[in-house]
Amino acid sequence: MAMEPIPNCRYNCQESHPRNTIFAEDWQYRELMAIEIYHDWLLLWNSFQINLILIQVRKKKHCVDGRTPLHVLDVDIVTAQCYRDKILEICVRLFQQDCPGVESESAGKAEACAGCPNQKICSASKPSEPDPDIDVIKQKMFSVKNIILILSGKGGVGKSTFTSMLAQMLSEDETKTVGVMDIDLCGPSMPRIFGVEQEQVHLSGSGWSPIFVEENLCVMSIGFLLKGPEEAVIWRGPKKNGLIKQFLKDVDWGELDYLLIDTPPGTSDEHLSIVKYLQDTNLRGSIIVTTPQEASLLDVRKEINFCKKVELQVLGVVENMNMFLCPKCKHSSEIFPATTGGGQKMAEEMQVPFLGKIPLNSQIGKGCDEGRLFTKESDFIAKDILKFITESILKTIEP
Image (cartoon, rainbow, N blue to C red; front, side, top):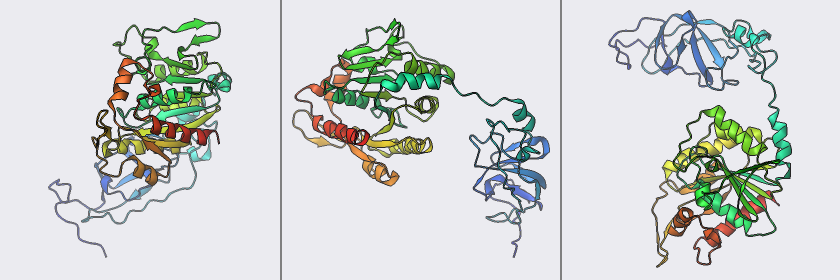
């Protein structure tokens, strides 16, 4: 039995709503991505009021950003009335046909495209051609046995620091060759961490030569290409993607046992591009770096979901800056409290492996600033945990 409409609704518009009124915020169909007003083709995103309208409902299945042209479903009159906490009498008939996708050869021509306002745009545009550089990258990376991405949705958690420490640990085996690629283009820190800031990249017949820190450890970073350490990189996505592609196909990496790729925080252009470019290579997976506090874990969960969506294996989660260990008295203090259980509990909830906890120690920060290979020093306090993490990773990628 229908309830009587209230004179003033909870949107505080100070008026009684007539029959046939619907609010977008009350829309109950969670699977629907967008509502479009048939009149004037206005997009309805927030809480605009509609009166006895014709609407189009689009299915979420093929929608990327809420604006991608999708199959237009059956147009029907929606009648509703503003009641206390719900909208009644909503009637929308959904067709089952799917949009062929904007990159399909049948885009704008399929039966499902009939009635779509973007039909002409899709039919006029050509489907995107396969990227010819993908094959070039595949051939170039053929001699790299294991590629690992170092990721984190949060900045400042120590991705670059961990990447450098993992590279140092892997290079302790003199029979193995290790490369580090720094694609944090706006914040390149590898030249400083490895103490090679003054080095320059040389161009040979086989491509750019990476900078060698040791005989079996080399690094490539945009930091070597800038005029100075304080020069800002102010680039949009396409230019960033172009340089990442150059690092993959134009750098003479040679034969590597391990290539570690240090990435910027987030889940945007650089991350999508590097996964796409390495799709036919020996990309083993990713290592997710976090700190114990929930402010970091919130974004790290997004990064793990990103990996799942692009089908990138998560090799494990590393919790950095876990406890502060005094180098003198060895007393431990919790600087970043794990109010929600920290990285280990998050890894369990997200069903990904947990690799270990690295302490917050002045040796690490000082070693990075001074550009020393500090993991090889006899008094390095986190040596055992790094060795355990490294062995765990190797067991996963080299069973």
